[in-house]
Amino acid sequence: MNTTKQPVYLDPDIVDQLQDRLARIEGHVRGVRKMLDEKKSCDDILHQFSAIRSAIMASTTLLLQDHLRTCVKESAKGAESDKAIDRFSDALSSVLKSLG
Image (cartoon, rainbow, N blue to C red; front, side):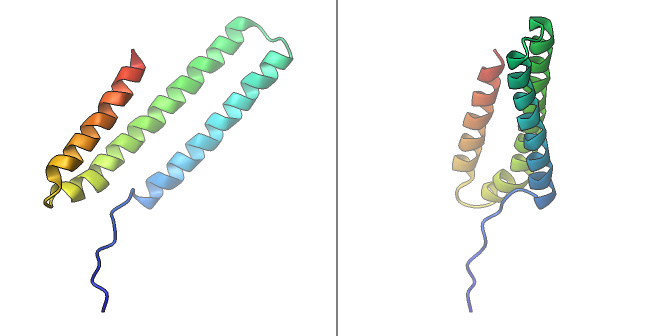
């Protein structure tokens, strides 16, 4: 009998939400490329870039929240708790640096 514990991963609903969000972001990026080809106004293009950045940050937040609830929480229960917290802290730091 195999008693190997399966690794914890994100909630499947969150994975589906992230896939949907990424598809929409890809659509927005394709839209910006089309806007450039069509020589649309810089203001309109900048507005789209702002929407893309907001969508990416919302997706990042969703990922961080579920990662904390699943992967980090489970790892923190075991002997690897310090490593799990350090990895999460590094990821969070990277996200926060990108805001500046």
